[in-house]
Amino acid sequence: MELFGIWIAAFLTLCIYSFLYKDNPFYRFTEYLFVGMSVGYSIVLSYHQGFIPFAWKPFTAAFTGDSLYGLIRLIPIGIGLLFFSGLSSRHTWLIRFPSAILIGVGCGLAIPNVLRANIFEQTRGTIEPFSAINAGTLSSMEIFGAVLMVVGVICTLTYFFFSVEHQGPVKWVSKVGIAFLMIGFGSAFGNTVMGRVALLIQRVDFLINDWLGPIGAFFG
Amino acid sequence: MLTKLVNMDRRIVFILVALAVIIPMLFPISLSVSISKPTKDLYNFIDELEEGSAIMLVFDYGPSSLAELNPMAKAILKQCFEKDIKVVGLTLYAVGTTMGSDLMQGVADEKNAVYGEDYVFLGYRPGIELVILGMGDDISSIYEKDYYETPISQLPMMNNIKNYDQIELVVDLSSGSLTESWITFANVQFNQKIAAGVTGVIISQMYPYLQTGQLIGLISGIAGAAEYEILIKDPAKGVLWINIESFVHLLIVLLVIIGNIAFFVNRKQEE
Image (cartoon, rainbow over all chains, first blue to last red; front, side, top):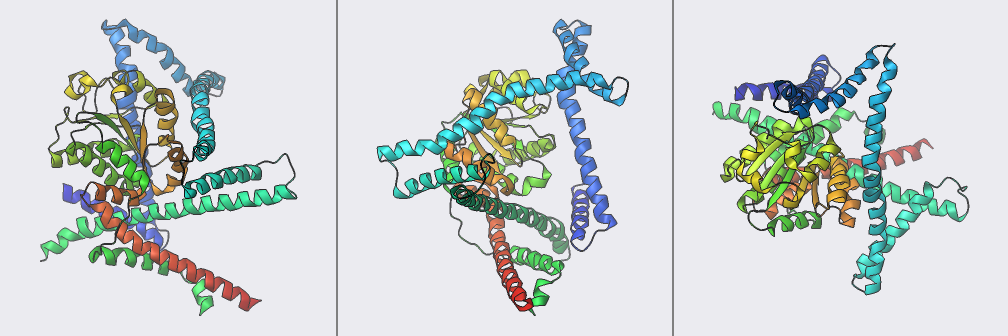
């Protein structure tokens, strides 16, 4: 059975890589198969690991008399079912209720935490090294890094500051900001290349060692 | 000649890249791998944990990212099992469920770790933020049962683990933005220490969190996985693959240089 799986995986891998020559039905078939299986797998898993333990079991337990607490679940289940009102043009307005709750809860949870994680902590991280400079605990390279970071932050933010016309000194500061952005994009691109090549290497490793390896061993 | 080079069929590049992968794979060459500070920091943190401590290992990735993240997961698990550090595995990414379960079981078999005593796999729950926040209060309120349908109250290891207070570190292995969710909710709300292992695509996004200490360590793509394998003194796929990767990078750099020279010379000739 494992051997069968390896052959299927090898066939599908070759189907996907056949796109490098040109688009073809084998590639399309495999692409659709992958998307379909991913979605199907996610739905089944969400049903078994989400809907069943959090909604269905507590709900049914309320009727078997195990725990009446499950009746409370009727409220979120009912609100969730309103999402399906979008299927009827007459009742589509009902979708506003679950949407409003979802957005409200989402914002309530996210805004204070996101502000702290991504604004306050990042601001602290940018400024904090300067207290260490005062205390004399940083090396010359670390001081250079701290100054460079502040210059980078100010210049990049200036580039995205559209309330003032980018002329004179502002233009030059924003140009430095663009340079910092380009370095950032370059770094991200380099890392992306590394990631994509790793995917290729893993598949080639699979084809050579797991698929062709046993065949080669069989023929001596 | 240069015009031909600029208009070269892209399939020739594909063949060159394929050769740069296949040849070093058939005839492996060992190159040195230098250890980066973020990887070393994570290794040291786990290494300094007391025996019997617990970490949470989160498999937030699917099959499309396993090339980079599976070697990291294996290396971390090996380190933990050798040091008798308990591992609570889970995922917030549905597609990663079976992969996480199989991977933990595979490494556990290799290191003779016992399910329920040395490690558990809780599986998947939908609702990212609510799962992270809920486990801060009580893990059993989110995961009443593990992935194999065993009530977690019956797992000996989980008797001492109620919430993040008993978890020394969350290591999120992620191919997307889920590490940011762990930082935003578990770190900010519960002061939980977080480390991450990420794919190459999102490494740059993680560095600001590393600089502020919101991440105590970071394993960066396949290079980070190779570094970790060297740190645990068990070179495996990560080390093999990063050596091959170096050849491909060399080829890409050469192609970029040749392509640029050809482009500029060609443009000058046209002028």
